[in-house]
Length: 232
Image (cartoon, rainbow, N blue to C red; front, side):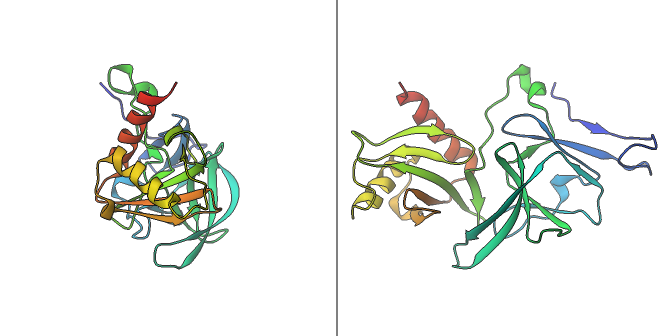
């Protein structure tokens, strides 16, 4: 039976010295320990913009096993820009702040789990949803893509924490490139074209595809199934 890791410390060197319950969280992608806190993240508020869990570090004790990973400027769907001061575990983005020393820590959706991978059902852990596939604006899932062009056929080449890498047959600047991209994604996900839209990412080859009314876990499962089916 899966075991939830919840600890209570009593020594003077412990994170909490007043008998508060501590919750231990792991990276869903690697299974490594990331966070120990007195906050039960299931009950923490969610940010409307991207569904991130909001941890008030002034209210709750917390210990992060992450490193500072610099800043990232994002363009939101409404056209506004946001600067994030990110916290990584290796190359994987786990959380961010809106100010360098801000008290609010925003933990990305599907980044953490209270269950260690080693404690998964029957000893087998299902692959977690990578951060490149995340919920935004409530009922919309965002997929970060890296696109290779002028290929023999459209296919998924790799799924990593940072992006889903795929190929298309048109040149990246061709007027039909976006249409081919959306048709390819539509076929995999089994959705209507009206549920999809594409935005430019950090560069011409990086795209953001928005999928309405399909949760991140379902999107990932269908992309992963297609990738496994067609990989050499």
